[in-house]
Length: 166
Image (cartoon, rainbow, N blue to C red; front, side):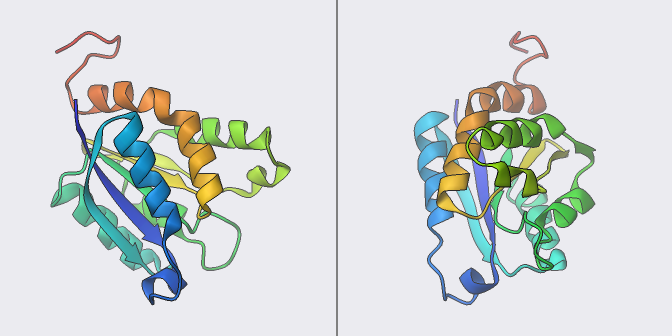
């Protein structure tokens, strides 16, 4: 089963072309290899709440992504507003993903507790915030990868809550 996936990078420098977006490339590789995801949209926006919100809404409502993975803007810096933008557009939170990522990351570095990443659902789209660094993206996405297909199957109505095909 192929999943429609969108990647959104929140980065002031990246949006100005001053920084290569290697974190998005890590997401792309892991999603294509691990869950046969198809990247249907990719965008880099500045660390501006309104721009992040607009991109998330367009990726869900227009492009109909089943999964949106954001990278960047989840720390404590004043311009890190990805969690606030995400919470403003989701209908329901799905905190287990962010909790699992922090738990696994804490085993590697105590700085993981500084992450403010969130995850939630807009319509039939799962939105998950990832860190901005390629290493952080790889570790965090690997921590939840095993549950993504089942979560997406339930969310999109392809499977019941207990793994029964609908």
